[in-house]
Amino acid sequence: QVQLVESGGGLVQPGGSLRLSCPASGSIFSIKIMSMGWYRQAPGKQRELVAGIKSDGSTNYADSMKDRFTITRDNAKNTVYLQMNSLKPEDTAVYYCYADIDYGTYVKAYWGQGTQVTVSS
Image (cartoon, rainbow, N blue to C red; front, side, top):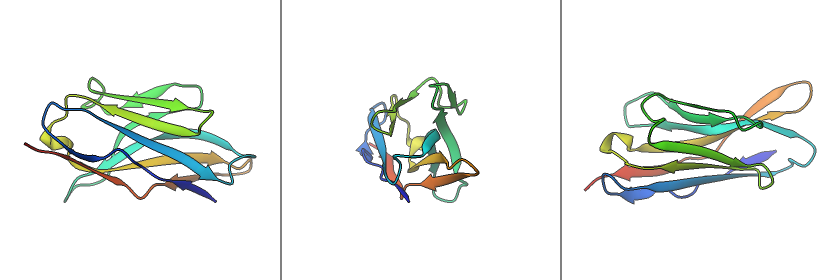
């Protein structure tokens, strides 16, 4: 089993910054973590992709966030980060991290429990 625990959320004023972290832990020594990344879900809305990063470092972003958010990954620590700058009230949501684990014959997605980000004055 693999566990993901997000941290770094909170209340921030518009224009402010936050850095989210999400380490993967558990039985991961003999398996490969493929993609990691972040989704978010605002009240009354569907969950949407924020950003993803593959094991080779290649990234993808939602168009509305690519100029303000930066995703990075520390493979040695099995941790994915999301630096969020110039935050707007519409960025308010629960942010979830995910990891796609390659077990050789299949790939399984794991999710964290989410961390609340609130952008408000």
